[in-house]
Image 1 (cartoon, rainbow, N blue to C red):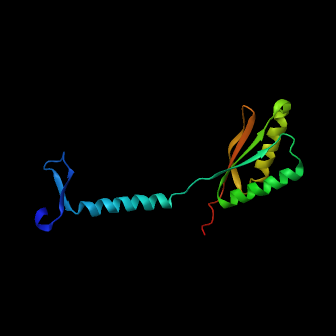
Image 2 (image 1 turned 120 degrees about the vertical axis):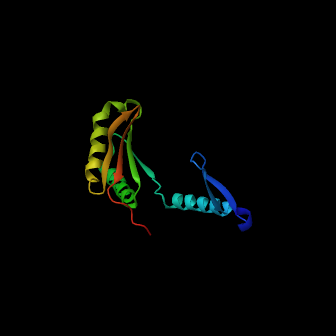
Length: 138
């Protein structure tokens, strides 16, 4: 029957009794499968992580400037990874770095939620924020 229709005979379930086969155009079927996968990949959400760097003694004006950037990133739908980088003996000011990151999380609580609390990793103390609402598609 498959030869008469000039199509392919494809075995669907070889373990069934009797085996299940289907008459289809295999090339067309594979093409459609590939197209569906490509479309699903295009529609998937890509997570973008933006970083913001602070020092332990970041001034208020610099903090406000970086806070505006973080607000913009969260409103675009990107994750924000803020970190305080300790150079040399500034590691003595761990508490100031933690206070700074918690202040940032508190100021951004209406736009994003804290995914990871401040955590010291070597010379960096990091905090991760994710957006609360999905970004608006253009």
